[in-house]
Length: 219
Image (cartoon, rainbow, N blue to C red; front, side, top):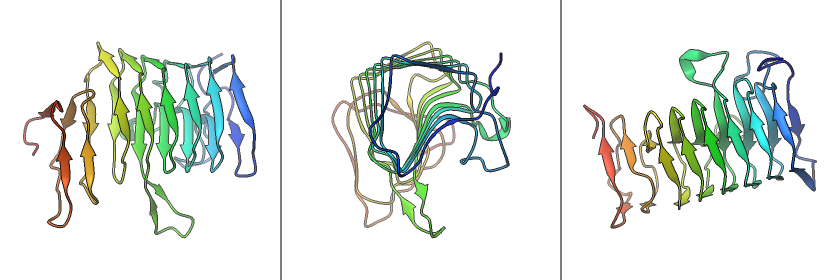
């Protein structure tokens, strides 16, 4: 058996009361077509809210868990070795990819993933709207990953109590311009790897205790 031996556990918008408790999910995430979001996920909550608790998601291809406009709860789970993808140039391999919605990701352990938690907006059904993300991410431990957390466009998470050791970067990658008022609270250091713009009518509030690191040529 190897990553990508099967497709996905799919939870559609009609799915209710779906719980994955004390389970092991491995070797999923195969691609059915070229849709980079639609396939390549071992677990996929598409507009639905599921609960994952006390479970192990490991050795999957592309993404361990994809949350699209989902208010799911992920608690006390272990995400291990999501580091094989079908598009190496775009770094598809992620333990959790969350776009839109307000999921809670708490008390989880991430090890040997390309990206631990990837946060970004979701394109709406009309193809134009951008649905922002408001995840709660707290008390998670990131060890020996590439990037623990990647913070993309129109993403407004609540961070607290997260720890990171022996990762390529022990930081939250701050990778997008700020398009609405945003507050950064103390947690892991933020790593600015590209130029980040804050428009004149938008306020970025940086609370005391926040650490901002800047990669060369970033601002």
